[in-house]
Length: 151
Image (cartoon, rainbow, N blue to C red):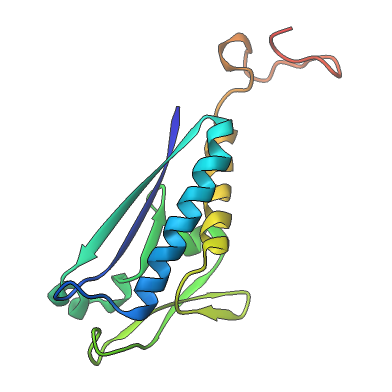
């Protein structure tokens, strides 16, 4: 079984995170649940890792907070998005936080639909690299119309 790995990280300071990271966490959980249900049928397991940034790490590079990777590739790479930044809240101090722009729309909290879209694209890339018909097919085998590898 193949594994789709999703990693999300955010600033956690004194047990608190900012509102946009808090909202993104709910959306990540919703997206992972949907992806698990959908991709299980394709033999793909979904694994979620949540990471925490310390305040000192956040101050060095605030754009590392509220960041998502899918199979070690940034979410924005899968969906042709761009990152930017904007002021946030007290937890973040004077540092700007990560935003995501997709087709001209800017997101402070990343919606589940965007995460699911990127996850499906990544899963399709994984499945595409797997030979069809498991072990009974030879790669690039041409079959008559309506026939599968194993019959």
